[in-house]
Structure formats: C-alpha cells, structure tokens
Image (tube, rainbow, N blue to C red):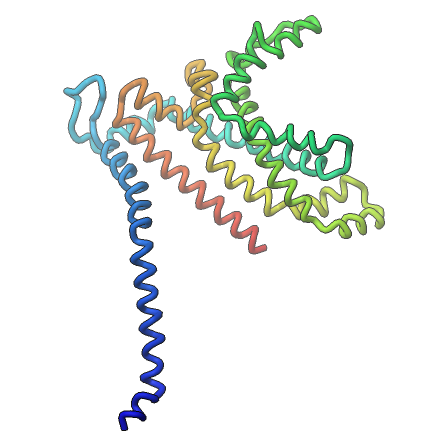
Length: 307
C-alpha cells in the first residue's frame, strides 16, 4: 500500500508545483531590492515636489511659510509667462521634430545610395550627436552666430550684407536650429537603418515597372519608414520637452520670455526667483503634461507596430 502511494500520479505532481512556486518566490525576493530602489528613486522626489507645491516656501523670505493649498497652481496657471512658455515648448518641439525627421528621412535616403566619400559623409552627419548640449550651444553662439566674430557674420560681410544678431532677433528660431542640428544625427541613424532593411528587389521591380524616384520614395520607401519615424518622434519628443542647456547658455530665456520653455521657467522660478513652492507647482504640471504626451505617443507607436 505504501509503495502504491509513493508511485501515485498525485504524489509525483506535487513536487514540480512546489518547485515552481519556490522558484517564483526566490525570483521575487531577488528582484525586490531593485524594485524598491526604483520606487524610492522615482516616488520620493515626486512626493516631495507635490508637498512643496502646496506650501508657501521662498528661499529669501523665511517668514513666508505655511500651507498654500492650490494658490501656487492658481498663480502659475494664470501667469502670462506660463502660457507663453507652454506655447514656446510646443513650437520648439514641433519645429525640431519637423526639421530632424524631415531632414533625417531625406539624408537617410541619400546616404543609402552609392557615391564617392559616403563613409566620410556618414561620419560627419552623425558627429553632432556626440557633442554635449552645452558645448553645442557655445559653439553656435560664439563661433558660428556671433554678430561680430562669428563665421556667419564674416560670410555676410564678405558679400556686402549686414550680419543679423540671430539670438537677439530670432531667439526661439535660433534655439530650434541648434537643437535640430543636435538631434538630426539620431534620426539619420534610425531611419538609415530602416532604409537599408528594405528589400532591394522590391525597389528594383518598381524601377523596372517605370516608377520614378519620387514615386518610389512616396509609395515604397516612405510607408516602409512609418514605424521607424514613429519611434524617432516618440523618443525625441520625450527628450525635447526637457530642453534646458541650450536655452540657458544662449539666451537665458530672453529677450523677456521669448525663448523660455516650461523647463527653463521652472528653473527660473526655483533658482532665480527663489520661489520653491511655485517652481514645484510648475514641476507637477510638467510631469502631468509629459505623461499625457508619453501615453499618447506610446499608444500611437504601438498602433503603428501592430499595423
């Protein structure tokens, strides 16, 4: 009777189930320190920012303290500078995406062709991506666009024209060009890889059927790049919402608030105006705004990948 019980199916099936349960528990136990660390890393700053956003907290006036409720949010949302910085953020992100994705698509198609010096051209177009934002901003501000000593000014004077102080007259457009110059290599890398994955026989068949270069680009290459373009847009948008170094180095948000985006507005409220409560309210609004944009982009990319 004992031998029958030992060799019964129910007794043998219990051991693998216990082993799987024990393995899951061990895996959760091993993962728990990293999960707790990540939760603390992200939740503690957010909770502190949320707390300070409801407080009257000014670094230069210790007597101003206490619970503010939603006054910081009310003041920020009715401030014309906030609305202007939010509009600048939209314009800056949209402009950089248009330049980098559009230019990256055309350069990816161009660099997929065979021509003399293609390797050097690829290295040159990718190199701006490895330059730090602060260095890039200084390079454009002092070397390229300086109204007196810059390369652009020398070229304008060489043909008898008067140089333009781009950072003073067109600050947001100039920052847009600088940031687009930094992010164009990233778009070229992703889109060139996607172009190279396209079946050459398909393009050759279209060419033999009489399709011209524009028709091949419109009906074959561009639909093939749809997924890659959506990934580029998603990644760049998340990073472009936090542009700070280029603005701080070149224009400091000026003239006035002409080139101030949401990230620089929060910085100026916290470390220039010393209003920690108002800056924290701006940080909470920025987090909510960034998460809404991220959810929309992730769903759009997922829909594109499923298609």
